Length: 325
Ligand code: NDP
Image (cartoon, rainbow, N blue to C red; front, top):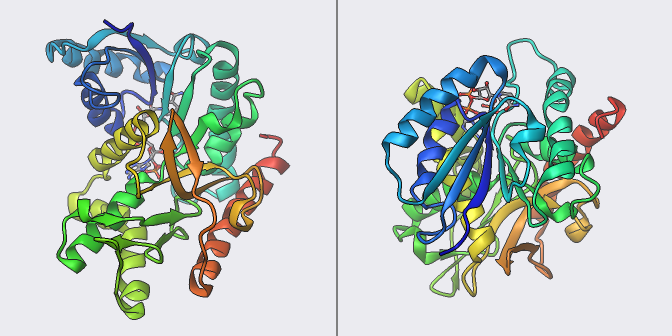
C-alpha cells in the first residue's frame, strides 16, 4: 500500500475548511486508494475550533485518513507537505481599501510561501482559495524561489463549474456533455467565462450574444453574492467541492479533447504578462497543469480578457509597491 500523502489545509476551522476536510478524508481529493495525513493550520485563536473539527474527522472513521495534526505555526504545518490548500485569508471588511486588504493578506501569504520554500516536499502542489486568490498566490510564490513557480495555482474551478452549470441549463444538456469552456483572468467580478471554444458533441455552442453578455457572464461572475443573498452564508460547500476538483484534476489529468480552468503563472501566452497568476484554459497530465496553446481569440473575448488581466496587473503593482513581492 502507498505511503500517506501529506495535505496541509490553512483556515481549517473556517466554513470552507469544514466542508473540505471531510471530502479529503473520504478520499475524494486524490483517489480512493490514496491514504492522506491532514496537517491543519489555524491562527492561535482558532486552534480550539480546528481541534473540534478534528474530533469530528476522527468520528468519521475514514479508512484513508492516516492522521491529523494541528498547528498555529506555518513552518511546522508545511513541513514535508505534498499538497497545500491555502484557504485561510483576511476577508475584506467594510470600508477597507484594496491596498489594505492586499497588505493584510501579504502578512499571511508571505510567511506561508517562505515556509513552503523551507520545508515542503519536493513534489509540493499549492492551491490558493483565500481571496484575493490570484494575488495571494503570487505573494506566496514570490517567497518560494526554490519551488518551481508552476506549483503555485489559484482557484477558478468554482467559476468554471458555475459556468458549466449555467450553460448546461441553457442548452438542456448534461454538464458532462460540455467541453472546452474556459475562465480567463482574475477570480473576481472582472473574470471572463468564455464559451468561444465550447463544444457539445463536437459542435460549437450556439448561444446568442445578448444572453452571454446580459445573463451568462454576470450570473457566473456574481454567483457568490447571489448565494450569500439566498443562503445568508457564503458558498462554502461549492468552493470546497471546486478545490477538490482542482487538485484531483491536477494529479489525475484532464480527459482527451477537453480542458479545465485554473489560475497559473503566465508564461506570456495570449498577451498575459509573464509572471502574474491568471486563469487560463489548462490541460493536466503527469501532475502538471499546462496552458492550452494556439487558440484564436475573438474581439469580444480579447477585450474581456484584457480588462481582467489589467486588474491583475494593478494588484501585482500594488503588492510590489508594498514590498510584498
Ligand atoms: P471561509 O472558509 O468561508 O473562506 C475562506 C476564504 O476563501 C476567504 O478568503 C474567502 O474569500 C475565500 N473564498 C474563495 N472562494 C469562495 C467562495 N466561493 N465562497 C466563499 N469563500 C470563498 O471563511 P471563514 O471566515 O469561515 O474561515 C476562514 C478561516 O481562516 C478562519 O477560521 C480563520 O481563523 C482562518 N485563517 C487562517 C489563517 C492561517 O491559517 N494562517 C490566516 C487567516 C485566516 P472572501 O473573503 O472573498 O469570502
